View 1 (cartoon, rainbow, N blue to C red):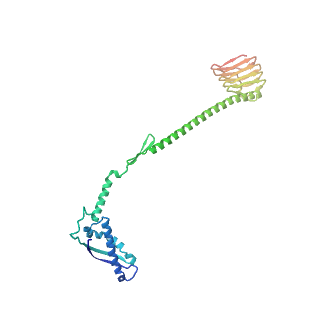
View 2 (cartoon, rainbow, N blue to C red):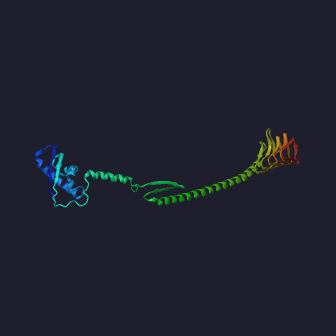
Length: 307
């Protein structure tokens, strides 16, 4: 056991009223009891040694006041001053090893340790994110390469590639189908056009010029046409027109253009400008037993033969 003497003074007030003298003995006893408990706790925790109690006590005063129970008595301690003198008999063995630091030194040591920790690279984690070949690579000094993220990205890219291949195939099929549809439509138009032109030829009454084109093959028979303008019958493109026993009077009786061919049997063709005109490398007009009145005109490799 080690003895010691405590001397000091304290000041207090009664914020909520009451007799200050009535609580004085309880405050004195509470402060002594709190001082004993706080010092014993510090000694047990190794935060203070017997020779350093006197120097360390001012740093514990707030804890002593809080543990005194003054607030339960309706009092508020506004000042506390304590002096402790410890007796160290010769029979007491000196403290083995280094004495615990006083609060000031402990604070300095704590700041020094914090500064050392801040300068230690092992206390920090360095992270980096790289974009390599379209992959976002995550690196850290703690966990290394994030392989799970790479696996997930590879799966997503594989899914995306498959989806785009599927879209490309569908687009290709759509284009092929569209072109096929256009081809069928064009074929139907040609067939339908020939049929429609043949119907027009069969119903032509000679009151307006007649024109055929494309791959049409038509036949006009026994029609009389008297026109003030244009050509009576015009065959353009690859049209092949056969006229039988027709009577045509117009500024230009017949006109063959491009690869158009007009074959006339019997009848008569009269043109105030040209009875027949053929323009193009393969344009042809052929008369057979037909009365032709008017000039004829050819350009390029076109031919007009007969009557």
